[in-house]
Image (cartoon, rainbow, N blue to C red; front, side, top):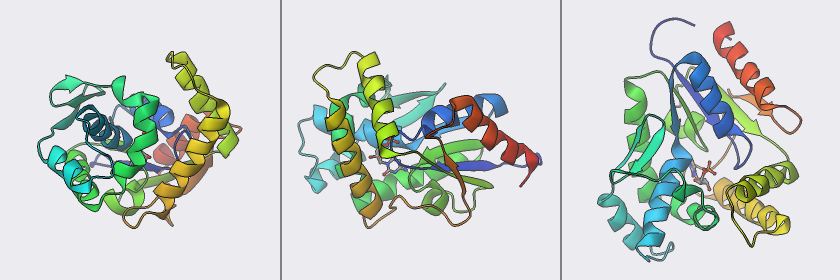
Length: 221
Ligand code: DC
């Protein structure tokens, strides 16, 4: 690894562990972590709060045009207010795929993500980072895990947050549905970049997954 600006792209389905792993890698390498899913979530949160139908494309675009999304000290700011917790609510997870498949939304947010990566060393996670946002990223990883394992993780995370009225079966169904929407949309679908290293976290600890990435990045392969 040399001293020039570099970028690490991490893609994969929801609850594969990519955000947790990326955050830890960022800390160890002392680089900036950009959670692009959080940006789509923040917009979804605002749309829901404003009682706009998530399928009302024009309504969603209008909201986005008057929205400011930024990261400061690893917190996400929506119009100047931290919304780290709010964007993780189950209601946001259930609706975000509808927002993320709107072409104009993707264009605007991809542009914003690209400008965030221009001047700094970054590790960025999402669905289309290695393929669309940063096709020239120095390192690309595709992080995945079985549907059951991902559902168990999401279920535990929601219980830990104090969410009620959730069932594991519902979470499995949500994950399958979200995978399908994310993988089959026309623009920026979730696909593995040809030059990505695959990291299956089903039977790996977080530390093992972090080490996998760091060893490739610092090993220069
Ligand atoms: O990674 P996550 O679960 O927080 O992502 C939330 C949603 O945003 C997910 O349904 C897919 C979408 N997303 C996207 O379409 N493109 C990205 N780069 C990141 C997330």
